[in-house]
Amino acid sequence: MNARTFVVDGGTSGLGLEAARILAADHRVVILGNVPDEVSRARNDLGCDGLVCDISRADQVHDALTEVVERYGPIDGLAHCAAMWAGGRLEDLSPEMIRRAVEVNVLGTAILLHEVLIRMREQGYGNVVYVSALATEVPRPGIPLYRATKSFGTSLVESLAEAQGTNSIKVMEIRPGPMHTRLQERVGAEFLDTVFAAPEQVAAEVVRLLLLTPDDLYVSGQKVLRADGRW
Image (cartoon, rainbow, N blue to C red; front, top):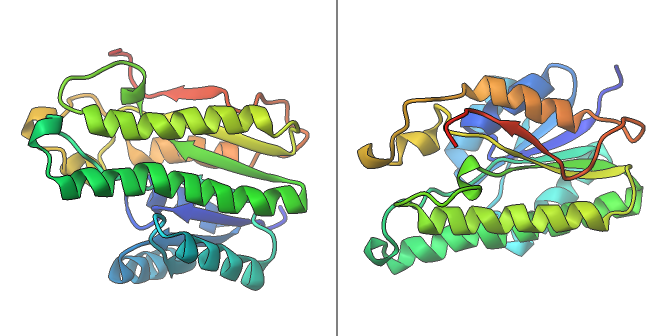
């Protein structure tokens, strides 16, 4: 197998970390995270590269992806796993939390996909996997802001998938249910779920999609994973 180059945003914990772990066994992997200590720890754990990057900052995303290309050549795939949890009634959330959730889940997603697709269009190939959430499919009490901001990514990805016009550039998403991750730990007792998928199980599907070749028969943008049967 020829080694390829992959970027995993949110690769310092949870699903992103497990996807990077699988990829790092055979490929060049660069994880992105916004906390320097966490990036350093994950980089040492996985034996891969890592860059500090706040995806809501266009300059940081541009510089990070430029550095990846300068070090390793074209980016074969991007896994966008980072997200910010924002649970609770909208009227109970602070303006700071509302702003940050929009910055990460909306602005960050748009900026990251904008930058990576520019490069993939130039090189003529590449795979993008956006990690959405099962919560986008059915309204769920208590998470209006989280659902709305993640739904933005789903809408964007579905449109981008149709817009590529080539199977050589695949824009895909998965919609997992609850997982034992740091995000799930932050939700609070009233939002805890009892049915879980393990991050490593979902990570295997993320990696499968990232490794698809231009010749693989696959419909870009297809919903590919439903982690539990409750909804």
